[in-house]
Amino acid sequence: MAIYYFCKKGIEYNNTIINIEIKMKTKLIESLDFTEEEYNEKTAGEDIASFNEFIDAVIAFVEQSGGTLEDAIVMANEAYYQL
Image 1 (spheres, rainbow, N blue to C red):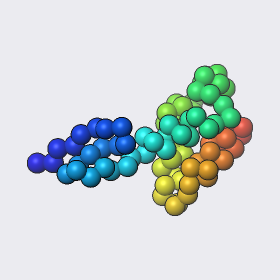
Image 2: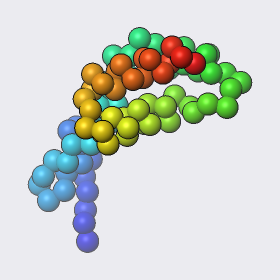
Image 3: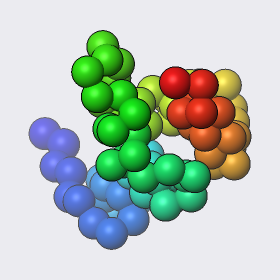
Image 4: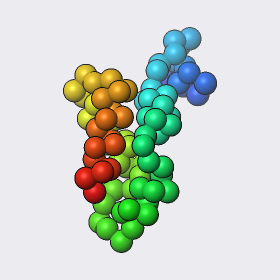
């Protein structure tokens, strides 16, 4: 049976740190041109993804396409300004 432990760097499994997207998510949110509150105000009453769903979708797309944190920042900012 696998036992996972959460730690500051990600998830530890068999003494190996598995880097997860939490680190990227935190850095992405800190680097955006807008805040969660601004996103929520702009999308209020719309049938649009929540802030967390939006960020998760950006990260998933960037990771699948082999992009970087900088790519995620640009993508998220451009998508926000097009709302």
